[in-house]
Each structure stands twice: as structure tokens, then as C-alpha cells.
Length: 465
Image (cartoon, rainbow, N blue to C red; front, top):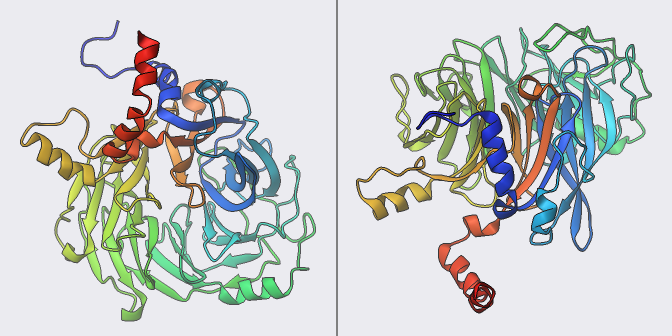
């Protein structure tokens, strides 16, 4: 029997969560993956019907070497708000494939797909990171569909971005306003490229589709955990627009400023948060020497308030910084620390639908949704009393049974999230993809919710009589 005050086990927490699914979610789809996925991204919306929309989703498959690693493009059916019945939402089997997810195309990737990012100006253009120094650029629609069988040659990237002197595995970003790509790696550098000319040539020459197996050399497929790969051949390459030095250890994540293609930030294993401006040279503009008490894994810049930056760390916390208050050197002073995880934070991302809301996922298997406005409202309401839940916590998604390695808010479908977890350790399986939307009564203003419920008061009283 569990002692009083101790944390529930993963299975206990999951069982409790599953029983609450009908009252917490407006829609949820659970999809079992044969292989773990290290990254997931929403692609363009491609169709709309009365009760559903169809949208692309980009996933990776991290295999054990018995078959090639792949970049998967899926078509997903997303049920529109207030359509799915509660019993339908709760009826899924953990080891089954969801009928809402259909594989559309497979690209045989030279090495593990560690990170996927789509170009906002042209969402069919996708960048990937693997265990190599290069960034790989893919035209999703022009790439041929491949069958991932042992011995198959790799698909040929449309473009290679060169310049790193060591592996660049995770830090990857696309600029929201210009066709710029940003990367960081083990060489401690941040590199910026422009792919404008390449995109223009693709648009004018759509017949440049690759034949299966053309070019690319075979990857040296390794078991999960790494392994070098050969550089793909016959792919055009682009040299850096700028190289930026300032970190003392591996750069783990990078992000552009939403309002300027020339400004960006980076975080790394040196515990530093660095702000850069390409117009002022290759040195840091601001270097916060100790943004956290451990390695930094992730960073995101608020698209609606460009003064706010989030960082997530191996110290289990998320920090929110105001760039107007940042100074170089010493210890960084976040305007708030969000402490609701009990393991390393792997991903943070601002919500596109409300400027004060963001998500964080971690190795503890949780994906937390936060609203920093609620911190101050709660302080006003309770004075000096300590809240039971972590300050600012709006919602806790406990549907994954192992580390939630990545998630992505959907910009086409408000408050809808795709999240992936590596479930090998806890279930003996591969991975799990979940697509979900929390019930709007959870995040809408309280007065709106009460007014809506009031309409049903007489019906509820009649039923309970």
C-alpha cells in the first residue's frame, strides 16, 4: 500500500487520468507507434468537412537498426470542437492504432530524426536534425514515398546546410518572417542560414522530384543512442549566413525573435541563455551566465509579447524571463519560476491562442499547461497562503506513461496539441502519439462558464429530483 504523501506510480496516475478523460477533454486520439518518435510537428491544413478537418502531421521513427529510420508524413482527422461525445473520447486502447491517423508518405532518413521544424512561409519545406553536423532540408510534397526495408538507400535531401564542426542534434528553428534556418550543436556554435534562393528554385522547377534511392549513401544505422552517419551525396548545399560563438558547451535549443529575423536566442549545457542580433556582429548581445541551476534543454519566445522568453532545464523547472531586465554576467533573474515537474524539462512552447499560456513537457511523463496571469490572480485572492497546486498551473495532461519528448500547439485548430512519448521503458512498446484538446470550460473566463451552465440548471435539478 502506498504511504501517505508519496507520489502515485506511473500506472496509478495513468489509470486515474484515463477515468477522468471524458470530463477533461473536448477531443482525444491515442495512437500507438511501433517506434518511438523524438519530434512531432503539425503541417498544413489540407481539407475541411462539417465535423472534422484534415491536417498533415510530421513524425519521426527512431528504430533499432533492423529497419531504416524514417521521417513520416501523416494525414490526421481532427474532430471539431464540441462534436465528440464523452464516451467516444474515452474509448481507446493503448496498444492500438487510431483511426484518426493515416500514414501519407515515408522518407527514409539518413540517421535518427532528432528534431523536425517546418518553414512558416512554406510548410511543405521541413528541416531535420540527425547525428551529424548538417541540417537536412526536405520538400515534403516533391519527395517520393519510400518503403522502409532493411538495405534500402536513404532518401536524398533537397538541401544540406553546412557549417557545424561537430554534430548538431537538437537545436533547430525556422524564422517566422524570413526563410532563415537557425541551428546549434556540440561545436558550441549557433549558425544562421538563408534558404531563400533554394525555395525560389523549387517553386519555379517542381519537376525536380527525386527518384527513389537516387544519390543518398546508406546510413550507418545504429541502435538508439547515437552513431555516426555518412553525408548524403548529390544534394546541393548552402554555407552559413553567420556563425555565432558564445557558449561554453553544447547548444541544446535555439529560437528566433517573432518580430525580427535578425534577433534570436540560444540555450545550452553551460546553463546560459544568450540573446543575439545579427546586425551587431557575431558576439552575444546579452549572455545570462546562470539562467538555471543545471543544463538548459529548451527555449521559446512569446509570439504575442516579444519581451517574454521561456527556458526549460534539467533542474526540473521552467523560467520566464523579461528581456528588458536581462544583463550579461552573473545569475539570471527570471520574473517567475514554474515548478510543477519532478524531472528534467524537455520542451516548452507558448500557446498561439492566448499570450499568457504555455506548455511544458518533461521526463516525468507530464505535459503541463500554464497561465502566468493566474499567478497574480491567485496571489490577490489568497494573500500569503500557499496554493496547493503549483502557481500558474492551468491543466496537467497525464496521458503519457513515459517521458514526453516533444509536443506542438496547432496554429490552425485552437487549443489542440500533438504530443509524443518514448514508452519503451515503461510499457515494452515503441512510442505514443496523442492529439488532444482540453475542454473549453477549463480555460474560458469563469463568468462565461457559469453563464453557460446556468442555462442547464433547471434540467440538472429535474434530473436529480
